Amino acid sequence: MGEARFAYPIFLSIRDRTCVVVGGGKVGERKVNGLLEAGACVRVVSPETTEHLAQLAKAGKIELVPRPFAEGDLKDAVLVFAATDHPEVNREVAAEAESIRALSNVSDASVEGDFVLPSVVERGIIRVAFSTGGASPAYARLIRERLEDLLGPEQEELVELCERLRPEVMARFPDDGDRRRCVWDRLVTWETIELIRQRKWDEIEEKVAACLS
Image (cartoon, rainbow, N blue to C red; front, side):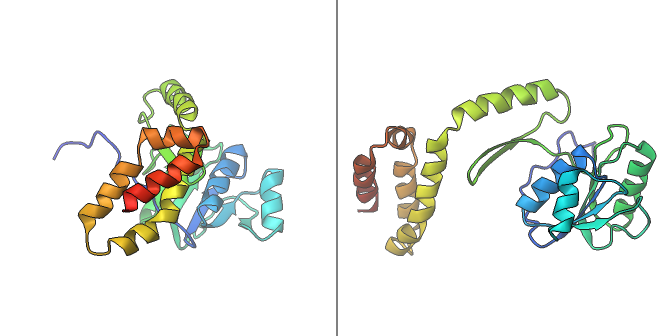
């Protein structure tokens, strides 16, 4: 088999799973914030940390190991982030992660990890992630800016509308997958998004009723 050209894209559930960040600087802080948003149990290993990380530890939101990385610090981890300024430490972290079959992300480009973090655009519960595989961070930034313009608040409101309607659609057509798909095909359109943008809620309610009939 030839060498894989692309990484496998995935949205991973890590709620209540242990994730370890080695490094307490600004890079480590960004990793920790994202992990906490996803509901992970976060352990930070670093002799020094940012004030934000220190406050998180004081509040009991993360486990802080206030010393340099040592063998055993990755116990029970499913994801590992090597985010120090020292390539040799990052290399050691990645090697131990591999030995316990945990996936590693390494901030230092000279050390290869198992996964990279994509650029992400967030609108409420909507997450759009994309990557150039490291080939052009500038292009990734350009695409992110365009998507931020495209995904206005009306996009989030449409998703929230669909979330509220899902139980009703399932109850109305419990054994008819084709009818359920037809409802969503008729409702989830650019026309509906435009109605939301213009706050035409009466027309939206009429459209919902028509789709459910």
